[in-house]
Length: 150
Image (cartoon, rainbow, N blue to C red):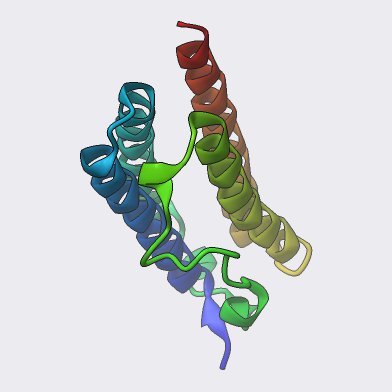
């Protein structure tokens, strides 16, 4: 069954919301102060990304949102970690960042993949989303690396 760009964007919002929740839960559970600070910081950014995708959806043309894309759930393979028991609370900050980057790169690759198959306003929306995801990921990683230097 094919999905629309709107459905992909809703899925992406859910992805960011779930990541934020996992980071928040792990921040409460960890005993490592640096990890707690990092996880809280990342949770805030994930919430911002969820809101950003919502704004994109609100502004996107209806015809772009209704563009059929593909069987995206089949193409988005599950993480090597089960999302319900991911051990962020027990991970070192470098490992947390590595996993964050891996998860976000998977979303970016998915959007990149669909850019090749859509035209017009749908392609513009996907391009803008990819750019925003990449910029935010870079900002998150750079800021988190500064935390490591403290």
